[in-house]
Image (cartoon, rainbow, N blue to C red; front, side):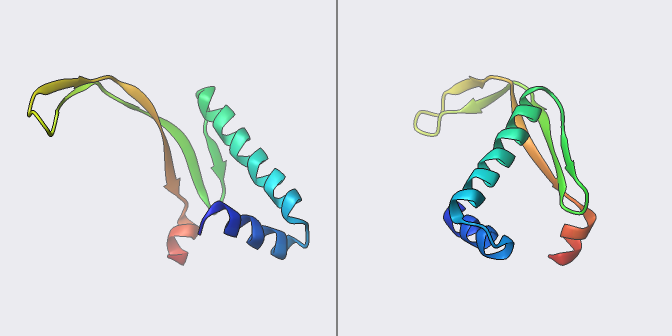
Length: 89
């Protein structure tokens, strides 16, 4: 399912226009991103938790040359499915 299909599904289920569904989805994504950027986490009971995880710096290899390269440490977004979502799968 892509974003357009998700927006159509939300609009149909909620009885709203696709424009309103798009604005709602964009608002949700923006709120989650802003919270994660601030170091917080977002928990939706029954669905899951969005959080930030830190990846340590490490050595990798250039696949073309085989040379060792250094990969910088960085923060990544993480999602852990909740109990109810896991049970539905």
